[in-house]
Image (cartoon, rainbow, N blue to C red; front, side, top):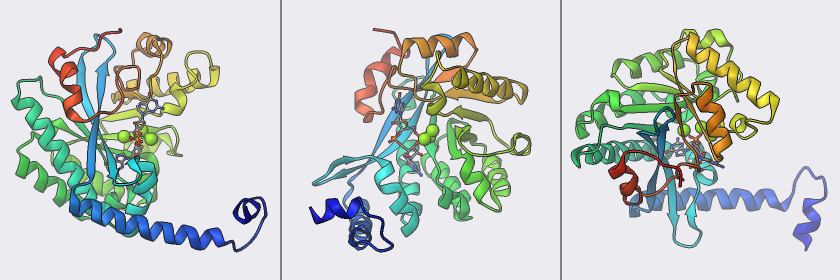
Length: 281
Ligand code: C2E
Ligand code: MG
Ligand code: MG
Ligand code: MG
């Protein structure tokens, strides 16, 4: 209960800090071990075309199968991976897994799917990134246009040479998407100078649809922006039929969310892949 009292008190130093530093180190070591022992997992979340319910893509989302903690979500460990530099190795691993999986779905006779992979700020800052992506494409044989890299607005803005890096990636023939769009501070003119193919409307705006008039206004502004800049559009985090209806009515092309499917291990997605369409139950 000393700990509980500590939380309610303002202090420049708290024993919590030491505890947290220790936790971080333990997590870093655990992550290294996870890489070595194959304890990382990639789950996939379907992307659905709103016009006809067709399955058009999958987003690769990383998890850590921890021996004691169970399935650890990326928000818990990606920051540590970023700070320690482990994200470079983890990032290549995810990319390879995702490309191999996409290819094996294609080989199994499914329609070609877009596979989306998240790239974090630290990865974007490394010039190795372009070589790594090129190497994984060459090694797996996945057509580059089937791979979409998702980069947040904030990452693009916080890195000095990001525009050049995006150009180099684009030159490989891959697709580029801005993730969590609307949560950063990009000036709209930034967009027009970037070789971007798609924007993803952040879940925080979708949550309030259709009732919240601010969320609706922001969503419609993003829809108009995407249309005039000729960018593809995906909405994230659709959980209700009402949100789906609003987005469809306003011509948002693609969507992801728990309404369609949670991110799942590849085998669990077989029924949807076989059917090729999402159907309301
Ligand atoms: P993100 O790329 O914006 O991914 C969307 C997140 O929203 C995922 O969380 C997904 O599970 C969740 N989500 C999807 N639909 C819904 C919905 O309808 N409702 C709610 N409440 N949530 C939904 P997740 O998997 O925990 O990933 C969180 C973030 O971690 C990702 O955000 C991405 O920024 C990062 N991340 C995940 N995998 C990787 C990776 O392989 N590399 C890097 N660098 N970052 C990753
Ligand atoms: Mg993403
Ligand atoms: Mg997102
Ligand atoms: Mg996000």
